[in-house]
Amino acid sequence: MASRSVSFIDIPTAQSQTFGIAELAREFDVTPRALRFYEEEGLIAPTRDGATRIYSRRDRVRVALILRGRAMGFSLDEVGELLNLYDPTDGGARQRAVVAQRCRAKADDLHRQLAEIQAVIQRLIDFADQLDGK
Image (tube, rainbow, N blue to C red; front, side):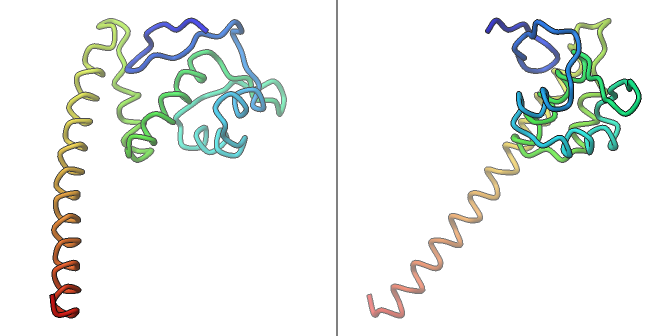
């Protein structure tokens, strides 16, 4: 499947212009309830044909970005904030810069947490060794 650069990650292109809830749920391996929740949170905005939700290519891209952001440890509020930074007049440059900065900050936080965890692990090992008389 070919891909094109969209916002801050590559999203495989789709032949269709619109998508049903079951189709998107299957493609992204999420439940229809998750898609409805993203809609309730204002992250996606499908149109309606009666009770049927019709998702656009934009919605599809946003679902992919939501899932990518969540997988990287961002909250839904953070993901929404990052999605809303997209400005087609600058080709998404500001959005990419902010996302890169936030990713680096998150990585720094995780490195600090990892160092703290490693220190606790070493203290546990040292204490267990003391208890064993080593």
